[in-house]
Every structure is written in C-alpha cells, then in structure tokens.
Image (cartoon, rainbow, N blue to C red; front, side, top):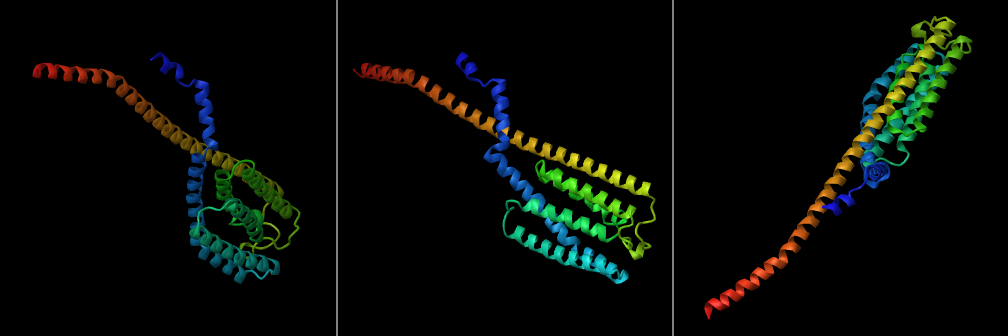
Length: 267
C-alpha cells in the first residue's frame, strides 16, 4: 500500500501529462476528423446556396450596365462556382487535405471582399457575409493565421470606406440602390459604420477562438479519461496477477497436504 502511494504521479506530473494531449497522435487524429466534418458541412452549404448566388448576380448584371461591375461580378461568379464544385468533389473523394482550410478561407475572404466592393462597398447587401467567414476562420485555423485573415477583412472595410469618402469610384453604388459613389451617407456615417463592422469582426473572431478552445478542452478531457481507464485496467490486471501469485504457494501446500492425508487414509 505504501509503495502504491509512492508510485502515484504528483500533481505536477499530471499537469504535464495533460499538456501533452494537444500534440499527441490521438488528439491530432480526433481534431482532424471533427474539423473535416465541419468543413464538409461548409462545403456542401456553399454548393446549396450557389444557385441563389448565381441568380442574384444575373439580376445585378441585368439591371446594372456599369462595365467594370459587370466584368468583376461575372468573373467572380464563374471562378467561385468552379472553386465550390471542385472543392466539393475533392472533399467527397477523400478526407481533409493539408492546407485545404487555409486555401478555402483565403479564397472566401478575397472573393467576399471583391463581391462586396462590386455591389456597393459598405452599402452592399453582401457585407454581413464577412462575419460568418471570420467565425469559421477563428474556429478552424490556429493563431495567428485566423487573425491575419480577419485583419485582411478589416483592411478591406477601411479601404472601401476610404473609396466611398473620397468618391474614388463614381458609380460604386448599385443602380438598383440609387447609384452614385456612396449609399447617401455622410463621411461620419461611413467611419462609424466601418468602425462598428471592424469591432464586430474582432468580437466574432474572439468568440470563435473561445469555441475552439472549448472544443480542444473536450478532446483533452476525453483522452485523459481514456488514459486513466487504460491505466486503471492495467493496475487491476497487475493486482490480479499478484493475488494469484500470492495464493499459488498456499494452495500448492494445501494440495500437497491433502494428497498426503489421502495416502495415509488409504493405508
């Protein structure tokens, strides 16, 4: 009993053991599998909304004859459609590839920023799509990569605010929404809108990291419980072997004595 107590790991050792789960093969395997499932849902959700996006772009192309807008939106919808379908096929054929999430999120940030600019900048109906992209980036990518993408989104917001404030693009706003270089806002309104959107992106990114931290903690607890279960099973097996060994000698003596008594009884 004293030896068993002495062999118990200290609290520092248990803490160090817990820290190793994040880099253990079991942790990486479970994390990759769950991220693959999450990414798969995102991939097929993109394919599901693709017809609606194509319909929206076709309507915009029909109602707005601005040459640069028609060229940019047409190129974006063709490239995005091809990218979505190719990635869906790749994900269906095999598991998550290395770097797939980073490539997809980088494409999403760039494509969404371009589409937002092409449909009115800060007055675009596509602006809120930034927030779910920031959330997914924060959940699926480890720092600093996720926050770099969010930083690019914030930079795009302020670039669009500057373009509208300075009137750099005379026909930035959609014809369907009144046309012009801005959506009828003052410079103060533009700055406040950009500031609140930037703050919202940071809040969403922080929330995403919190969710990812909780997810990783659940995996660590599950691995720790499994390891403790395996360790307890090993200790019980060792105890059973020791008990069997301790009982073997007395039982052998009893068996021998019983044999002698039987011989004496016969004679």
